[in-house]
Length: 252
Ligand SMILES: NC(=O)c1ccc[n+]([C@@H]2O[C@H](COP(=O)([O-])OP(=O)(O)OC[C@H]3O[C@@H](n4cnc5c(N)ncnc54)[C@H](OP(=O)(O)O)[C@@H]3O)[C@@H](O)[C@H]2O)c1
Image (cartoon, rainbow, N blue to C red):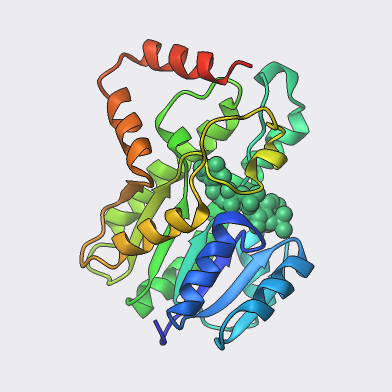
């Protein structure tokens, strides 16, 4: 990966930070983006000798991509990982409209804007990858996380379409869907009561990179064997049964 410059959103924490560590170990230069500059600086200082640029920035909204390109001042990007995102736990009618709008502004509008801004140079380079992080939530109804699940369903569908559109360009496009993963996600979502087992972010990244290393990666993958089995099982159930099962599971 020594010819690569990988832009990673959401690099200050969790899965994004783990992608940064793994790709630095493979020799990729990095552009790390998130709001918390101190976290990005600390991460950059801990990485092996690759060229690392940090861009402290809020990636919400449909102007996120152009703002990011301007901040980079023409620095080329050959691969892109969109990991920035957050969810909110609670019944839809009890959550504030502002919080829900912020979730859509980052998980959907910001992500589409960043992809639209960088996809042409990525296609022209033709030897990198575009990875978007969705969630197992993308495959299911998500009572108590209704908007979050819907944003991730968007990311899944959007990325699978881009996979098709990118065939023959050399750009590898894939969406990865982790299940519960041990990051700051649940603190941000306000779900301290979540007790299920969690994957390590290292495993999510390891499985994603292993799949990307294949000559013809699939449009989408679910990280974690149990998560893959759960998603497969829901395909055999009625949508009513899935909504009830997940709703019951999510109800404290
Ligand atoms: N953890 C899970 O269980 C899980 C499961 C499935 C999918 N996912 C998805 O995985 C991705 C990574 O989440 P994570 O688990 O690693 O959680 P995390 O530790 O909370 O990381 C989220 C990242 O997004 C960044 N971010 C949040 N708001 C932002 C904004 N407005 N502008 C720019 N950056 C922003 C955060 O940085 P700053 O706060 O510094 O901006 C942080 O780097 C997310 O898309 C999440 O939906 C997580």
